[in-house]
Length: 265
Image (cartoon, rainbow, N blue to C red; front, top):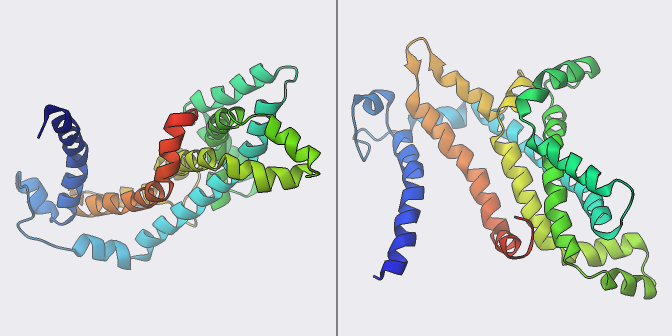
């Protein structure tokens, strides 16, 4: 083993250690976790997973989270695709300022928007719905998606558009049949970041829901009680929250690699 190969191996082990420790804790009882340091479960148990998979308040929280995350990803890409195309192909008065304003929304902390969103959604009857969280997250995901996609689209020669028009393609036909497949790597990268931000965001998701659309990040607070935290249950819930992200990474892994090489990632 050379020094060149040793460095990435050590780095990967360093990255995987917290995940292993979370998985290790999920198979322990709370008493064993608090009892001392153990590299392996001495009293192996699946009770925490059984509780999550059989209690509707637990497994439905995962369903609620997946619903608003998928809605948010679709909404964000639907708005970002034409917006990014406009920024990459046209020049108009204030385009640079508008582009910077979009990015400035992404820079703002979610805590700034909690109270306005709560009051707005309560007034229009959207509080405690999946659509409320999905729309709130678009405020942060659309600027990010526009920024990523604009970088990919600017790398596509304008001659492609002109050739399509000469060949008689209408704009919708050209955009959906030719242009979108050309920037599919950028769409995959943008979808990945939109999904992951919405999946891990806690503040807005927790404050814009109460019962009907309660996400997993809010359900995990149930592990706290007067006697302390149910650490085994909390660890099991944490392990299960890693699965959707891992699945998304698996399906868009090739797009992410291209994104680091070609786009704004």
